Image 1 (cartoon, one colour):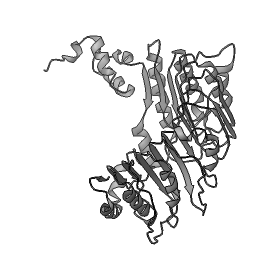
Image 2 (cartoon, rainbow, N blue to C red):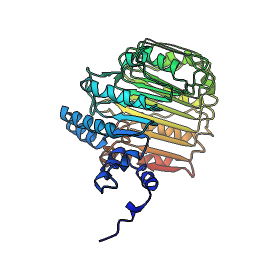
Image 3 (cartoon, rainbow, N blue to C red):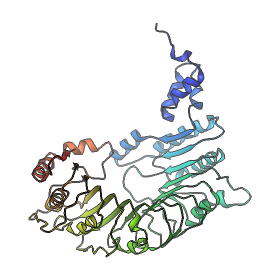
Image 4 (cartoon, rainbow, N blue to C red):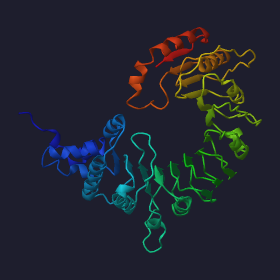
Length: 432
């Protein structure tokens, strides 16, 4: 019988080893021996409750039963009941949960903030797309009631996805969390008006994504470096953000992104990264505004939804407005109907681009709409170092389904190989 030399190591060493595991993996070590039974409880001050395997299975089945949720909730409750730490650095829950688990989730919120949590995240994104009508509502009174309010002084990051939270509560957090630097809210239907104002705010990152009831956002944040908004056209007022470097603006169908440039006009020249989400169909012609050149921009990312009979040449003016651009990324979202073929067009007059070094195309379909734009990029970027062509839909990139989709895109890969003849000398050509 082999000697168990690992169990003879000091507790400090074993706890250090366990810190490399997820909570679920560390918990499993409790069955190894009496020595290991409760050791995992001390392994980390990071509580990350995620079950990607179950979520993947549920997504493939296109359904989730309440017993799946109950099983997950029971596991979280069990671990929290045993956890002895006086403070925690991070508390994260990522699973398809909703209002049905409201009481348990409320206890998790209390637990995390009673431990002085620094980074807090609730991600209740559904396992598959569906209309969610019973989303969990973040407990407003727990934080604003004078008698029973929760201490939030240690909070540095707040992320809420598929959780209802009001603009008033977010403003309360910003006013009462002196260390809060990051706020990300995704798919909340409770935010209407949001006012982020304060000369002493530490806030560096603010993203409000797919919150379709938003009417207005006003910002006065001297330390803000990254701002993102995706949704309907709103009243956007950016009064003071001298450190702003990264912007993400996404429009919806019939809601182009042009309106946001006016609010951002004083800061466009200093941006290093710009991401635009553009719906480029139903014969909506994108008329990009005549703004000053993006003189400091290094990375331009465009997320475009299209029909094949259209052209992306309208976007060239954005590329050429950034004289120092080093990386260009295009994520192409095609509509569900089959794409139509048309003749490939060619850009005749263009300025050689000496600074563009890297191009990434995600969702490449090999039709005229993306083929002709890539040809323009390869011909104009005379000092290009690398281009990556990924035929996978942006929806599956980074998911377990990416490998499967790559295998199903052999024809698209063959089409992509035709682009090699336009490649500048010495540039690397990669097809995923």
